[in-house]
Length: 180
Image (tube, rainbow, N blue to C red):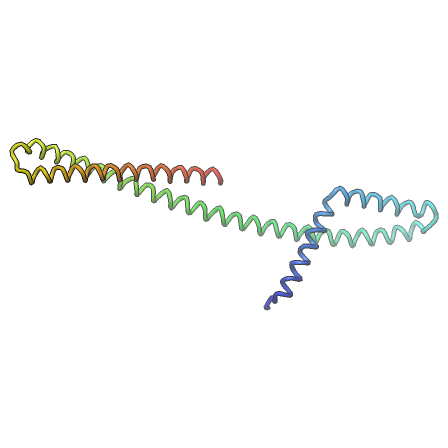
């Protein structure tokens, strides 16, 4: 069955009316109205405006119809709440999956940083060995040593940046976990 825009608009209007009724029924104004209504209904036979049996029959019918509609409105409200809860559950599950993926990425980055740090340490040792042998070597080897030191320094900066990024991602994960 196709739902046209007009049908959808009518549904929206009906839903707005139903929401208004649901809100009003649960309000103090509704309580006051019903109390006054019942007082008036029971006062009518006392002042001989209507017979007691006739008033009781009409009142019972009105209250029964009202109860039927209230049950429908309450069920509509429960259905909406259930839909909303299901949507929230899906959102929470998606967020949890994202957090898990980010956590895995952070662990992988941490492993990469540790491997890079080990490589840098090895390079640093090689550079120190080269420096010891530097007195005996020519200018070209000195240039290589300077370049290696430069690369080591750049790698250290890259590692520092990666570590900072990991801390930032861990902070984001903590914030996401706190929001859940």
